[in-house]
Image (cartoon, rainbow, N blue to C red; front, side):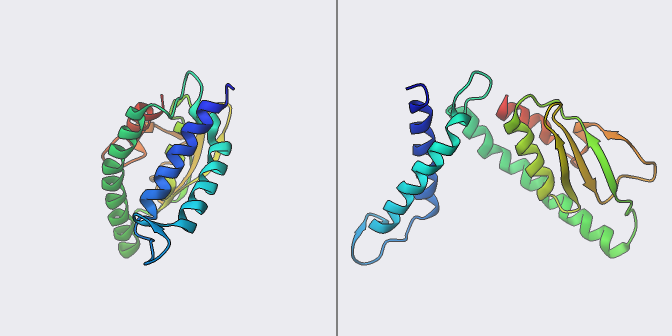
Length: 179
């Protein structure tokens, strides 16, 4: 019974996301509102599977995805992330066109995040930026090893979490969302 409420919460959230992403798929016949009946059956089936697989993310004291404030913060996080993404795209394009300041290498990042979800969100945010990729994650210490297009002229072993992005400290945002 302990797993039932997180399972239901994850299933409902997955089904809502599915409905939002598939809105307008209804045909002229055999439809309910904006969705076709086969589409709703498929969506419910996939949501149940997702609920079973992701129920552990919806329980626990340190990280509870059922908190609506976390979803709101995650939605707001998209704005600074897109700003950083645009800056990174322009920077990489400029470096490739000019051929200057390209000193690629792998550096260690110790973000100080306590949850696996925080490390996952940071890793994905870094990898989406052009010119960077998360190569490895130390699961015990939550340290990330990142390949960067430009680590500078002086090789560094580690970088501060606030300096991995150009203008906005996304690590602080991720900490607000996941801890």
